[in-house]
Image (cartoon, rainbow, N blue to C red):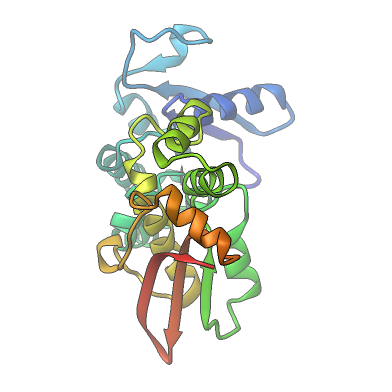
Length: 261
């Protein structure tokens, strides 16, 4: 695709979608342009002209001139249908939907191979850090024994506020929502689901294991209280939501936990 003009069909026009639109328009030297944007709510006021938008997914999916589909919606099942159809039609796909990818990973990889097209999803796993690329480029010939890290920013923000500023959990969560670090419905983050989805994807690039999120053991941070934080600090410890995967000869064990470090 590097030598081709990219004609992009964009699904979703939230913060990330708008950011992509702005970058492409601010960088005319890029061989890429957004041909159409599909959104859910046609009545919502937007910052660019209405003719850029449609509510019909087929406007993009059936357009043979669109060679790249960028999927940035929050409905995992709807996203899967979009990505599945795009791959079947030979379009390259970029997605940041970690829930959708984690739940349908094996099928998506099969569709990619069958249709000989690109499926890019590094933005679904800690987008600001090139984790997937590093695992593939620097560790593919090494025998990894484990991966471990904080991969959910919302819970990290909340726990930091509880430990360092002695906020109650509810107050820290409210602050995270007000600052845009957590969604209005934060269950995916504080329940550990988001980190589990990301870990599920990282397992494939660390150990070659395709595991659904339901195969992993995990918990969230909802039960962490201010007294827990005070006790941890007294013992010179901290509390973080840490995603961990370990390999014993063949990979038999994956674990996601919230633990003291």
